[in-house]
Structures are given as C-alpha cells and as structure tokens.
Amino acid sequence: MASGFIILKYKKDADKKGAELFQIIPRKGNLAAAEWKLCRNFSTNLIQKVKADPSDVKSLNALTALYLQEARTSGNFAYYDKAALNCVDKVLKIDDKNFEALTFKATIFLSQHHFADGLALAKQIVELYPYSAYVYGILVDANVELGNYKDAIEAADKMISIRPDIRSYSRISYLREIHGDLVGAIDAMKLAVDAGQPGVEGTEWARVQLGKLYEQTGELKYAEMNYTISLENRPNYPYAIAGLARLAVAAKDFKKGIELYSKADSSSNDYSFKEALVDVYKEDGEISKANSIANDIIDEMVKATELSGKDQTAGHYADREMAYAYLAVNKTDKALEHALLEYNRRPDNIDANETVAWAYYKKADYTKAQEYIKIALKTNCKNPTILCRAGLIFFKADDKINAKNHLQEGLKNHPNISTDLQTEAEKALQSF
Image 1 (spheres, rainbow, N blue to C red):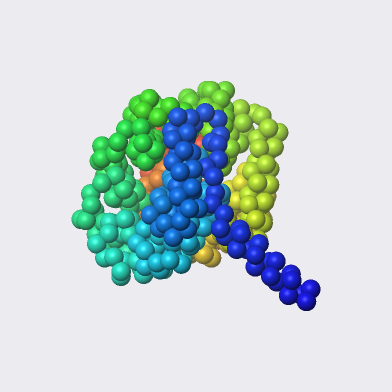
Image 2 (image 1 turned 60 degrees about the vertical axis):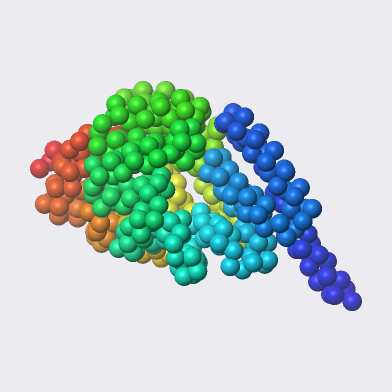
C-alpha cells in the first residue's frame, strides 16, 4: 500500500509539473523594459487562455514562440527552453503532426546543442512539409553543427529559393564565412540586415554579425558603425555593447573594455561576456580578478550540467564552452576532457576539432594538436583566430611551411583578435 501511495503521489506530482506554464521572468538590467512588459502581458494573456482551454493549440504555439524569442533576448536559455518544450509536448499530444510544434521542438533541440536529435526531427518534418523555408533553415543549422557542410549548403540553397529573407541570407553568410569567402559573407549579411526591421532583436543580431565580419577583415571603422547603429535602434543591446568592448580592447583601452563588457553582462545571462571579461582583466594585469570570474563561470556551468542530468527538459550540452573556461585557468586536463566530449558528439565539425587541437596545444602535445587542426581547416575557413592557432600548432610541430602560410594569412588584414594570440603569432612569424 505504501509503495502504491508513493507511485500515485509521484504520478500526480509529475502531472502537476507537466501542467505548469512558465511566467515571463524579468530581464537582467534595463534591457528593452517596455518591450519586456509587452511580452509579459502577452504571455499572461496566453497562459490564461490555455488554462481556460488546455486544447488551445494556437495559444500554446504562440506561447512557445514567445519563450524562444525571450530566450534569445535574455540569454536565459535553460529556463525558456524548458518552458517552450513543455508547451510543445502539450501540442504534440493533441496533434502529433502539428507543423509549428514540430519545428519548435527541433529548434529547441538545437538550442540545447542536441544537434543529432534536431537533425533527425528536421528530416521527419521536411517529409511532411517539403515547402517550408523555416524547416530547411533548421536543416542548415543542424548539418553545420554536425559538420555535414555539403548537406548544409544544399539545404541553404533550397531555403533561399523558397524564401529569401533575413533568416536565409544570414545562413548563406555564415556558410560563405566558414568556406573562406569573407567578402561574400559580408555581402550576404548586408542583405540580411536590409531584409529585417530595424530595432527587432533578429535584425540587430544580424547587424552585430556584420560588424564581427568586419573585425575579421580589419575594417574596424565599419564594425564600430554597425555596433553604434544597432545601439541606436535597440538601446542597451548587449551584443552590440560587447562589439564596442572588443574595439576598445583592440585600442588598448582596457578600462573601457571592462566597463562595456560588464554592462553587456548586466543585461544578459550569456556566458560569453564573462569569458571576455576574463581575457580583458588578464590583459590589464588583474590576474586574480580574471581567475575569480573564470572559476565562477566553471562553477555555474558545472551546476547547469548537474541540473541537466536530473532534468532532460533543461539539458544543454556546453562542453566546448567548458573546455575554454578551463583553459582560462590553465586546467588543461579538464579542458581536454570536455573538448573530447564535444568532439565525440560531432567529430566532423570544424569548431569541435579546433577546440580539441587548441587544448592539445596548451598541453604541449603538438602532434595530436596538428591532427585535429587539419580537420578544423578542411572548409578553408579564413577566420583569423583559427588561422593563427593553426599557424602556431604547425610551428610547434616543426611544419615551417604551413606555419608561415597560416600565420601570414591570419595576420595580413590586421584583424581584431585577442592580444595574447596576436603577440604569440607575430613572435612566431618573426622567427622565419
């Protein structure tokens, strides 16, 4: 009887938990406060509709879309991915072929870095709905993350033939970027920005990506222009603030860089801002402050990993991010452990291979590092950070020809890369 009571109570608790709908929570700082109030009011209205009619699929899908957008805006992916998945599963219990719910679920899988699951579901969706540009966008993203670059290009071509818009242009831009065509990537991202509505988060995200492309080509004045316009259109947008922070650091104004990165971090839960602060504090000579932040990042990521083990709906793979966090505090064994976990999930992806290569480089295992960096270079990517890291790996592995070629290519446009990497690359190049 006791066992039966426990099982029944567990089932009731699970049913109650599954019936919960998540409230929109306050954003960090003062990020688009008026916009957030509109989102909160809209979500409250939708939640009331669903509570009144749990079979209201239209309201459930609208609520899911709101959660996913709020995740992007706030950086609070764990909370909103779980909220969105909760709604999606409700819809799919009612209608297992519901287009919006299926595409939302595939999108959530990608957000959680469950790329293989996202790809498998996207393939099922495209069989049901073969003329949706949105589904082909999911196929692009999933194939890129898994290193299926030929399939990603084919999906992007299909996507843009159905609907040339900000989503398709931005994907074309990224594919051109990782295949070494930075000029073409800039042209496509300009089209993406022009196709969007100024001030909307998606448009300003594209504008920031355009600025970052200009940083790679050393055209910092154009990068600054785009970040400034983005902030005019969307005040306090953290990714635009971070762009200006990178430019301040490039100008050796570390105090301003710290101020701007701190401001960006105050408005978003994205770890990248804290990671950037670690680097700037190191460059400014504040090593203890840098290490303190780096260890805080690791603690937060470990807690998130433990949570995902207990609750699959909140699961998020972040091993690549953890690898770099451990490298920041010189824990190379832990860094390599997480880099290999990421690699084992997607061994054909160039970013995963670069992470493993860099971890081996930091461990002074240059033969192993060379093995992985060659795979990271397979798309002919011209990202200056990858090129400089590759050059240093080849240099240490005594492959002087490849070392010189990659270092020269990485530094030729005076790109905005980390000071430590630039200094090390320049020193190696001067030895020839």
